[in-house]
Length: 168
Image 1 (cartoon, rainbow, N blue to C red):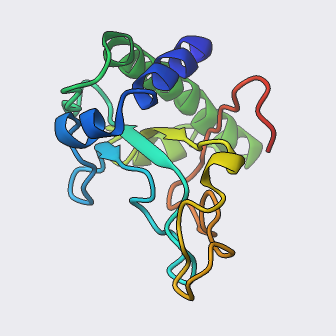
Image 2 (image 1 turned 135 degrees about the horizontal axis):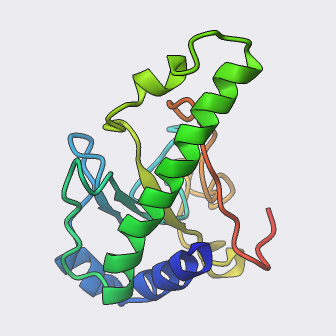
């Protein structure tokens, strides 16, 4: 499933930029779902915008992610990946309670019962050589442009899948 997700997201992000900008639902802070275009986010405001694009999805039974303009493979694979990550996360909550010696094994799971704050985020970082001069920093140089600015994730945990052959 993870390899299917990587393949479908590569196909998605390979679509022409004009198609993505016109047809994809845009990511908003209100929904935390949809497409964030290349350099559309700036996690550290002292740097140039982040050299990435993203597509956020939510729990299929909770919210309807707008997959307008997306490839069929992505439209079917993204919800399946969310379900698999949710299954893992529920087991992780139980394991965390056990590791902390809590008698209440559902202590962490209760906080995430509906998973309304959980997101599965597909990220695309173009190769460094193709973006090294794509953006200028606030001081007029590309020196401060990096793939993603320094930040803290706001959730209990982050599950990161690294594609085969990717370094980092």
